[in-house]
Amino acid sequence: MDVIETLKKRASAPWRILGEPGPSDDELHDFLEAAVSAPDHGAVRPWRFIVVRGGAREALGELFTEALLKRKPDADEATIEKDRERMRQVPLLIVVAARITPNHPKVPPGEQLIATGLAAQAILLAAQSKGYGGIMLTGDHAYDAHVKQGLGLKETDQIVSFLYIGTPEGEPRPKKRPDPAKFTIEWTGSTG
Image 1: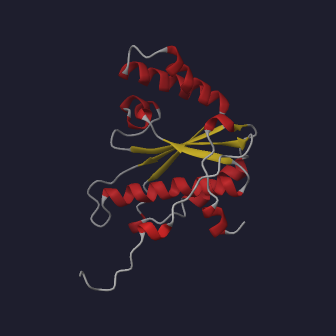
Image 2 (image 1 turned 90 degrees about the vertical axis):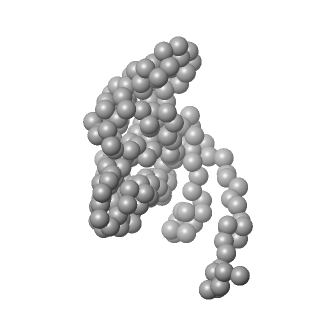
């Protein structure tokens, strides 16, 4: 599949349909090489990748539970169990975080976040090109100080996404794409 086709056919695979096998170490290395090729103004390299697989998935599920109960002490068991189930289901999770250099002389924080988001998309596209499915999720855990601390991130780091990657059991639902013309203008040099 060429690059344009890969991009046009990109589709999120719900975590519930992602299972074993997960990517091999060599495939994961390829995915991360693709990630660090993302555009990065000033070569700031703001991205951080935390790979979670094997028994660490259960530990992450527990970290998520702790964080949830700190935020919502009365959380119901179904909500708690959803995080645990997700960790048991998906063979690979990559936490993609941005280590922001707040006062960089040339690269504002927003550009550093964009570079990290592009790195996350590169991982998903690389995984899809190898036959894996994936989805990029955030949610409350991405903004939780307890989760960041438990993952070894700095307080100023920002979690951009949790990437869930595995072998899809079935095809993701095709996504209807909007017509790009609805979002595009051609500027001709005048404002009138």
